[in-house]
Image 1 (cartoon, helix red, strand yellow):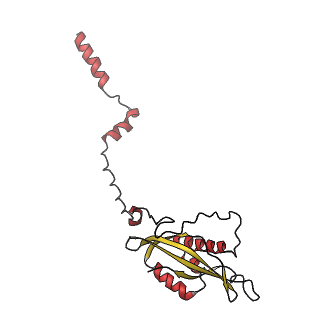
Image 2 (cartoon, one colour):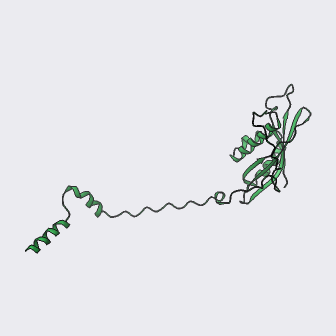
Image 3 (cartoon, helix red, strand yellow):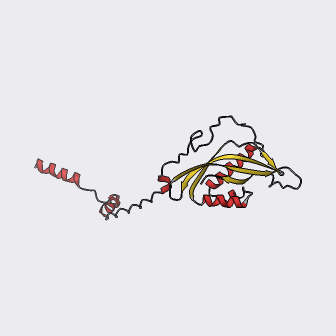
Length: 195
């Protein structure tokens, strides 16, 4: 009899209590399990992001800018100076990198030369530039000119890396009577790159 009582007590401990407190759990346990949502397809890898980082030649190496370690002025830059012309090129290539081609095109003053450079740009899917130290100012017929070494690099449309060392000439009209404020700013006049 003792043994029957122990078995009865054990059986009571293993039964679930009935009542409203347990109905939500029972319903959840007895509900059919929804199939797992299919995982989203893995997006295709962007070819440009999967490629190795660009590595243009460093200054002083073949294909790189001249290794000129002369310190430049850290103060305000006179927009009429050669260094001001270099800043225009920095702005130009920043606009190209940001795919703001129309704004970049406004920094040209020679439409025939711009068209030639645009044809070159059409081969690239990605373009960057390192701007070298501007040369000395030269003057002719009421204008100032300055040549600036430029290393362009990036990727061709087929994904291959490219780099090219050349120069760009900037021009500004001197402060003469009849010249406009826009004419007195530096504009890209010519680009000379091999190939």
